[in-house]
Length: 401
Image (cartoon, rainbow, N blue to C red; front, side, top):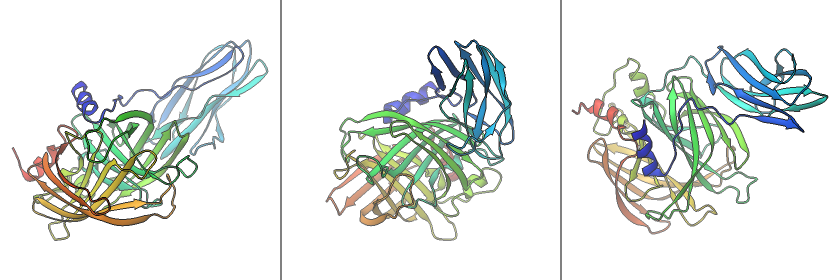
C-alpha cells in the first residue's frame, strides 16, 4: 500500500487515508463539562447492529445522555434510551436502516446544562454488488444534469480514485463557476470512503506547479453495477449532502456484471481502458475515460478533462468529450458545460469547443491530440495510467500476457 501512496502523491500531489480511519470525533462542552464521541464506525452493513461510544468529563451528575439519530441532515428524530450517571464512558448499540446514511449526535444534560455534540455521519451499506473493476467509468446524479463523477478502481489494492466535475455553490463569493475535485482512498464490499481534495494554481496544458489540499470526505455506496449513492462533506464550504448515482452511458454496467459471472466480448478499445489517465509532464491535471464497446455496433467513448483556464476565479476548468470509437482510435468532439450550481438542478448550457483524438498504443499508453476552437489551443500529450496496475482488466479482455 505504501508504494501505491507514493505513486498517487507523486502524480497528483494528493494524500492517502486508510479505509477504516475514524472520522474527526465530535466534542461538545460548557465550562468544565465536555462530551466527546470516542468510537463510531465509518460504515455499517444494512440492518446490522453497530455501537457508538462517548465519554463525559467534568460532570458531577448526568441527568440524561443518549443518541439522537436520523437518515437526513438535521433530522435526528430517533432517540436511544436515556442513560444517567456521572463522568465516565457511555455506549449505545443501535440497528442500521436498510440503506442511506445515518446522521447522529449525542444529547447530554449534566449539572443542569444541556448541550449536543456536532452531527456526524455513518454510511450504510446494502445487499448490492461488491465494488470491482467494472464500476470504473462515468457516473452522475440524474437530478443535476451537467455535473458528474468519474471513477477508477484498482481491485488488487482495493483502491479508488474519483474526479468530481461540478460548479461553485450559488451562495459562494464566485457562484456558478466551473469547479472540480478529486478523491481517493480504499473500499471494502460495496462501500468506498474517500478523502476529497481541491487542486488550484495550474495553467492549461502547462507544467506550472499546483497546490492540492484536502477539503472534505465523500462516501460511495453501490446498490448494484448501475446504481449507487454518494454522500459528501466539504469542510471549508460548510456543505454536506447526498445524492443518487447512475451510469452516464446506459448499458456500460455490462463489464461489472461480467466480473460477477457474465462473459464480456472485447474490441481494440475495451472497457478495461476506463479510469484515470494523465500526462507525466503536466501534473495536477488529467483525464477520465469511460469506454463502452458494443460488438453489435454503437461503440462509444466518454472523456472528462480536468484542467485550468482563465474564466473562473479559482482558475479551474473542466471539459468533456464524446463520440464513436473504431479499433484503437477515438475521434471525438469536445464540449464545455457552464452555468450550473453546486449539487443543484439549475439548468446548464453545453457548447462544442473543439475536437480530440485518442490513439491507444496499448492498455497503459495513448497519444491524445486536441484542438480547442474557443481558445485556439492545439497540442498533443502522451498519456498513461494514473493508478499503476489499472490496466489489468484491459489486458484480461484483450488476452494480453
